Amino acid sequence: MSLEPLFIQAKEDTPEVYLSISEGSRIRGRSLPENAYEFYKPILEWVTQFSSANIKEFTLEICFDYFNSSSGRYLYEMLHRLDNSANKNYYKILWKYEKDDDLMIERGEALQSLCSISFQFIELSS
Image (cartoon, rainbow, N blue to C red; front, side, top):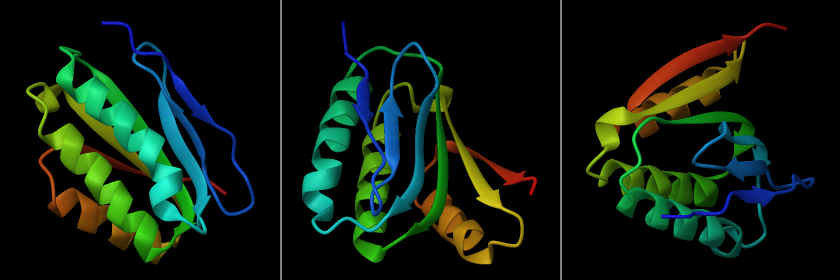
């Protein structure tokens, strides 16, 4: 299966997104899109195609300054789709956060509790 990488350039209120089977995948920045559904739709479509493929070893780096509740809903949906994959035991989420950013730690822990994908929490040095 050939699944093209997905790249979305960061803007003031939306994160940078790079999803790839063969290279490092990441979502980082802040997520306050005016229309969260429209922003996250191509990401969810990519993840749906990816999770139906027989891909092993996938790591997704997630590093947010902030995300609003509607973005959180679609992040959950993305993780839920990955979690329904037959290969979910080979997937890993690297949840990166700034030192003392308790809100992002809590949100990462909340998302982790909703799926069985392995999370690794990484504090960024200032």
